[in-house]
Length: 453
Image (cartoon, helix red, strand yellow):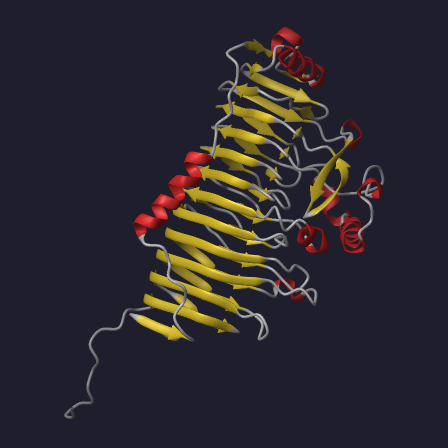
């Protein structure tokens, strides 16, 4: 293995735009956090058992949840308590405003996997708006909603739903064609005879959201999807989700989001910041994903923190603070876009991240999967500080732009990668700075030829 040492300042191009000082970065984070509102839930509380709920693992509790939600709606909100037990639900739970779904310790909600039990709802699938099978827990156009408690939500996604993975390619392509061709939304219906798996928890055009303390396992598709929503706190969740595409948290066209103290263990991205796909995403440029704080989390899975690949409306003002891996990640930080997307990724601040064994520590690419043409994305103003990595089995730092749209203004400061196969692969960039970066074994004082100066 070549030992490639990058120590002190290495400058590629010219100087990047000035990054925030530590105090400025902390102030920017605090401004976002202060703006986020936790939901206001009335004091009123009822138990699921009051509506016929049975935690015997056999009885279908769908009607009990429907009755409970409607009863709370009539009371202008409150808490629906799920006591200890296993509650099978054959179909989705549809939220109403001003409700906290509270799972007591030892409570598990377990969803059925018969597609016929899940009606079509307006949703998004990999960045394209369409009608698909309802997410298992779904809220649309709401305010002040919460899911809390020490219980577990089990999507039972490893059986019938998982079998759809090998059948979805045709529908995936149809959805993308609809996006590119501007097919009216009412005509984008994917139900019986189609194979797009539903998300597990989705809040859509909803504000003041709290997800706290629950465990999420075995999702059919993405685990938590914050779609066109704002003012959300996701705190102290635990994931055990290893099915296909089991992203932990996907924020899409989302703003003012706090993700903290979450323990990830996912079969795909831990956190993915998205903003719509291609033509449709670019048409929604007024609603980028922005003002997102990701801090004090434990990362394990495929990739740690991801931006893209669906990010056509733009992603900006993301702060990633004090996170560490507790197991394997293929890539620690991964920005991915391609010439189908357009849009931008900018003003990203990553500070204090500890990685173990990865394939690549940082991978920033404008050519994800080599797809598309005509809509290059702009990636700029990315600041990465205080990073340690035990080993990169691939490449420590990868940055890939295009000659006509270079990745611009990236600075890595105080980065240490103890062992790697390759140090860097940096192409089509401008203003990339390495400062106090050591990849491999740190160089000491130079040696001299024996007997000579």
